[in-house]
Image (cartoon, rainbow, N blue to C red; front, side):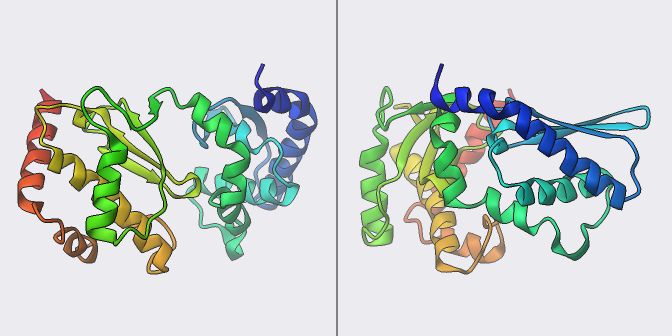
Length: 244
């Protein structure tokens, strides 16, 4: 058994009692009477809830099994308010949101996350393309070699879901395996990598605290790509193919 999962198992009882106490304490402040909360094994940092009669059951990602109690209480505020479609008062969800986005937290669960991410194939080499070669080119041509090498991976997902992603806290850059093909021009793969690295650069510059959405400003930055129109045309073609 891997250390991270063993650690989760060893501390689960104590942590679960603390977790449920946090949720019940917050529930009382919100006037809710019947709430349960427990840890569940998810591949991602996600939390779910379900309603049965008058009881709301919350299932919390076991990535947080060792989180401080104030983080769990903040999480309780965050989820209880979300599940009731209520605004969270006085920024009481801020502690959890800050903790869950911190590099310190993600470095502590990195091995577990990578092991559980079944769609990820770690390593730059695919069957036809090498992500390291593509990253080196994009980094040199568009970013003056100022970006440090990320963890590179291919992800097996429908291109309708996402074409790639950059996980800032782990410095993980994953590209959809649909681009690991000789039938898709390399410049299309370069564009997807450029797009994801733009999110990273904007976040690090301080222009955006969270992931940048595709605003007008962001789209203007994308147009710096040398074959922007051709790449967009290819992406629309791949999206249509994915719907068939």
